[in-house]
Image (tube, rainbow, N blue to C red; front, top):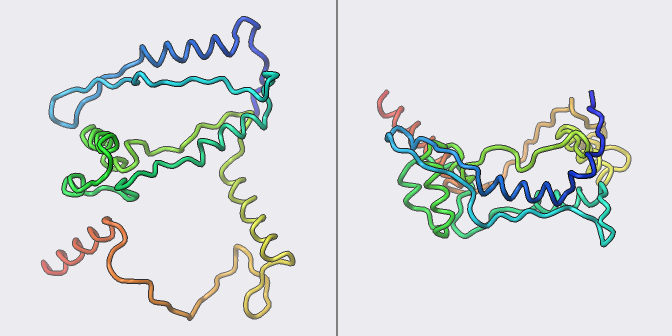
Length: 205
């Protein structure tokens, strides 16, 4: 069920909300335990908070297109930095071997110290990159379905067929008998760690 929306009272302008956001960011803080060390850490926003009002053009009118463009701008941004890991960090040795800028290293080490070891390589964040409102969002399932249908229509206007001319859909299982050499070694440290664990277990047996 969709909750109906209505405009707020005239006194609650976007500028008031922007000022309240800045005030909340400067005042908010939380104290977190640092693992099992008995120490605590004060976490708060830094001084570089940037609150902006989403408007379209010089008229100041808010449109769905303006909101979608704003979300798309940040949804396509990535934290690309030299040495930033793209896989889960498994040990302190990997943590010490990081070759990323000091700012990212400090964020990763802080996430690790706070117990967010599973998401340390994501700078401590393991959720989705955005929150979705009732008014401007669709489900991820709808997005995946639409993307799949678009790609199929783009590559196979009359429907995708297998090598024998039969229609391919979600219920079709294709067996490929063609093998190719993919490469040697481990592309990620988690695969390396699993291999070492398997080898150790085999030796013990």
